[in-house]
Image: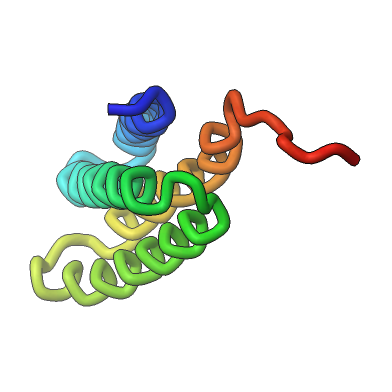
Amino acid sequence: MSTRLVRLLAATAVIAAAVLVAASMLVPPASRRAVALGVAAAAGWQALVFCVTVTALGRNRLAAFGVGMLARLLLIAAATVAVTVLEVPAAPALLSLVTVLFATTLIEPVLHGAGAGNDRDR
């Protein structure tokens, strides 16, 4: 397992834990299951997408970002359907899911580029 992948997975776990704790304090007890479901879905999906993109598209960072964005959009679309099927409160589930996805989107370029050198002279 590459160092970059380990950093991405560790950052995802930290973000998911922070969102779970913060959101659980803000919502009523009846909605905490929905928050946990949203955080777990986002963190699990991000971990899967990071593993696939780093393994398959490790050298092509732009393609990895594009695949990651499409995967996030697919998860949001699936989650909007899933909350009605599972009959969980939509707002806490979707907001916690989107918060994890947004935060991992912000740190992804930083962690993908960590330790990257510039091979070209300018």
